[in-house]
Length: 80
Image (cartoon, rainbow, N blue to C red; front, side, top):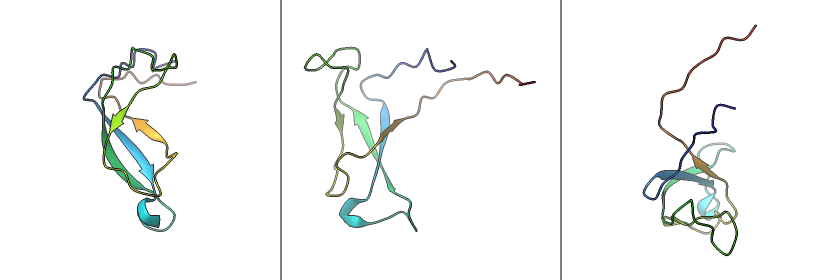
């Protein structure tokens, strides 16, 4: 309920997690690769809610999750 105002835009950073060339970030952890949003998130591509990102990926990163971290203030609510 706290992310309803998230607005991604062209030029924003995203991170692609993967195992390029089978490498790890230590133990079982993936390598984090920075990418830029390269298409307008508010416009559907091929009638689907998808967008393009731009980065130099490597074999082992196909199908990797993409994480968007928005930089904005948040309000913390104490639970009972």
